[in-house]
Image (cartoon, rainbow, N blue to C red; front, side, top):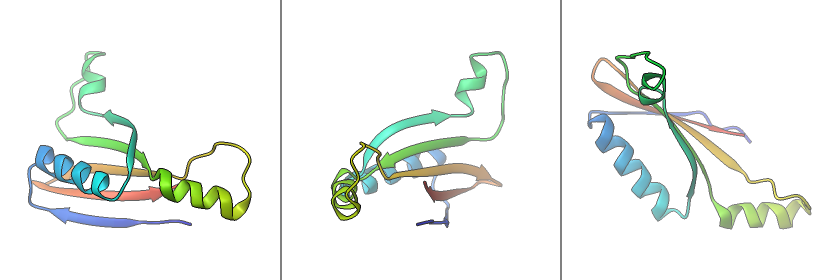
Length: 98
């Protein structure tokens, strides 16, 4: 299954991330990892002016149903990769299912 959804918002980058995390939590998604592409390169002395963050989440309830339906023996999660980036003061949220 592949999901490619793009959402545009006028919220601030931080507020968009905060609201997205709340919404994901309300729908039983768990955060696997988070990477901020503005902060991480800064550790190496590189400075980027655009905000860009990736959240990887999964829904354990849906994963269990998937395992049972397809008789999967290994513990592979159904992950959702969410990319949040800014362009001209608008923020875009894109989702990719692995």
